[in-house]
Amino acid sequence: MRELRASAVVITLVALLAVPAAVPSSMPLQESSTLQLTGYQIIFMGQPSDQLVTGVKAKRYRIDLTGTGFEPSSKVFLDGQKVATAYVSATQLVARLLPGRTPAPEEMHVQVINADGQQSGILLIDVTSDPSTFSISTIAPRVGPAGAGVMITGAGFAATGNLIRFRRSAPPFTEGLVADSRSEDGKSISFTVSLGLCPPCAFTVPPCLSPCLAMAPGDYQVSVANLNGITNSLRFLVSSADGPIGVWGGDHVRVEVSDVEVRVTGLCFEGLIERTLQLDATGSFDLAGQIFTFIGPAAVPRPAKYSGSIAGNVMKLVITLNDSSLGPFTLVFGNDVQVVHPCL
Image (cartoon, rainbow, N blue to C red; front, side):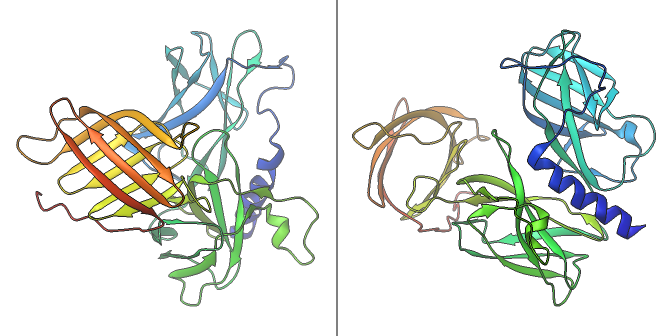
């Protein structure tokens, strides 16, 4: 049974490179530029969860979907089967799993279909193995460029045949493998972040001729697949060669730039910009965000402006609030400093 289940995992990994529409063939379909799936949140017994675990009562889960172009008549399909769908708004739907137990470890295909036949793209959600038997607990470092060495620790790793999977966290959703790795002790795996995301057959002997997809800098979810199924996933930021995506560090200040947001950590404060860092023609930036300070009452986010410039591998940053400012800070690309909050 394990061999059959593992084969299903590999098959679905291949399918992600050319995923067919997961809907009844009798339904006319047309691609839609307005109907889109952009994200999801798994809810387990009313609380947000990072995992959809195999063998659990399905009624304990729901999936909150975000996107655009949803209608009151929109229906959600999980692996080609229509499921109970609740319309919340044009940007949110709630899907319920089919009765019974959650399926064996797999990549679940999620798609939204409107009454006029318009279809969204397909979003992939992992159904993971029982974490007590197969899971990952740490990934270090959490940020690195192509070519960086990475170690994963966990449980249930095989001596050979551990497929390291990278899935991009934001549109355009892409996924593939970066390594087929060994584990000497069943608890740790070392691998190198490659330049491309490859199909499983790229690691067979002889390898297939299917092309690998370029590994674009940005946020990825990393998991492992082997005969035991699929693990949970942990975040890894693939940094660009020379910025701005990656880590910038200075004196007690750390800035992490991804393809979807910017996080700033300093002494007694944290900041968030809910978009990536973009420079103008002069190499400057001026972005609106929030700041959380850890002095005084419970932290309440306040509006803040993050402005500065980048020249080569050096960033200048000033954070402006209504009544004060922080900085200027000087940060160097690739300097991953650790900031300890003395106020907590």
